[in-house]
Length: 306
Ligand code: NAP
Ligand code: GLV
Image (tube, rainbow, N blue to C red; front, side):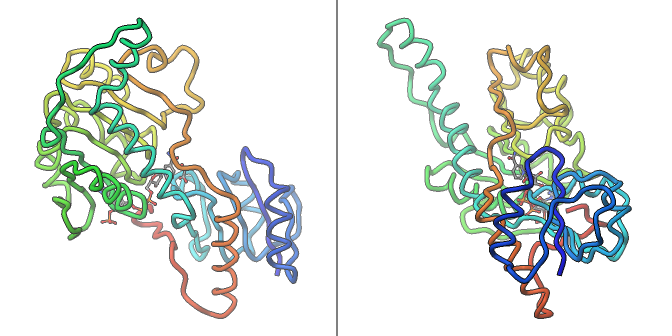
């Protein structure tokens, strides 16, 4: 069995070594143009040339949860695309989102500003019931985030494509329910995959439905959000601010207004990082399952786009 590794912006060597150790019977190597045909590939945003040359591949293992970059390529219809299925990402996402929600709810930025001036002051405690958090996307990451938010007793709403029934979560599904979901939400967390249906879904029209003083946490993909619409809604006072981990252009260009906006917190696409050990263990388990002829989780439906 041949395994090839092709990453757009990450050194493949540690992955080659770790995979080779886990699968001693396999030939594992980093892809170079003209390399021999492989059976399985481990990839992140590979070029079209890689797909075109590696026409014998059975499986493409993506080392992230989101497969939007892969689905932009022209892929052979029979090629199985497999996404990372948690592999240590959901707990990181839960930490990140809870941190952002709590930092906003408890007004820690205002306390920071005061303490930096040596000021000992109290703000009036806010009512948790007024801060319903709405999680868009109730998949592997979104569902984990809803559970973490429940620990802090925030009212939690969830929104997905197909209907869900999650204990203690007010669940909404389908586009006709979107306005209701947004109107019931003060803090919006985006955890949907980027698909033709979800691109630009966070815009003036949808974000205006959020409750007054609404807050946006985008941890999915930059192309979900119409950036100028967000800034306009913050500047007119309808929204209180945003925490953004993902952007239409990454790295976020130096001159981008998000960097300096006083009500926007920016992080560099780091809310849930791919963890090498966990990811390799998961991929190795799946390769072995495929060798035994078993079904595996995380196979992407190209028509759905995730
Ligand atoms: P997932 O398991 O595939 O879950 C996706 C969820 O979104 C599902 O609940 C799905 O609904 C819902 N959804 C899809 N299309 C929708 C639509 N048109 N309207 C409403 N809901 C829709 O994905 P995941 O593993 O949770 O990951 C979600 C995304 O997070 C990834 O695609 C990636 O872009 C992003 N991500 C970001 C980072 C980071 O560091 N910033 C890290 C990892 C992942 P159904 O349940 O009905 O199918
Ligand atoms: C990261 O953004 C991922 O999709 O895993």
